[in-house]
Amino acid sequence: LLSEQSAQSTCPSASRFRLGRVRGWRRVFGHPAHIFFARGIARPDTREIASLCAEPSEDAASGFVVAAFDVPASELPALLEREEEFNFVEVPIYPLGGGASSPPESTGIMCTRATDEEVLDRRGHRAKYEAALSPHFGSVTVWGWGADSGLRPCPVYCRHCVLA
Image (tube, rainbow, N blue to C red; front, side, top):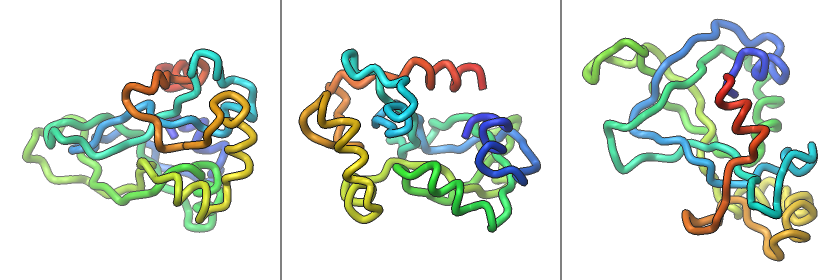
């Protein structure tokens, strides 16, 4: 969730919006999101179907800016449903202006890379991903796209990310 408007569309009571930084992670356009197909914004012919996720970085000094906010426990199920293809990991959030040795100011839940077994089988999303991906790619994978797969960001989503 990159913006207050986006967060509140799922979690209307979200509050205390602020920016922070996570360390030791990177963001990657590394998987197709079913919602891009459902909304008709995926471009499978050019493989412009990718959404962002966070994954651990080999470079401990790496990191990125995050949008942090508080969500009431009663609204967490809607957030988990919206972000169906991710795992959720608790991470420390550091202040933007803090140096490399500054302590975290809070912790938060971040959407991270999952596995096909988790998303397709355990969570029961295989049928809808098959309907979206099979006609274009034959096989079905959410998280099996390698760096050389030609997977590219979904343009409408990428614009949303840049504007947020």
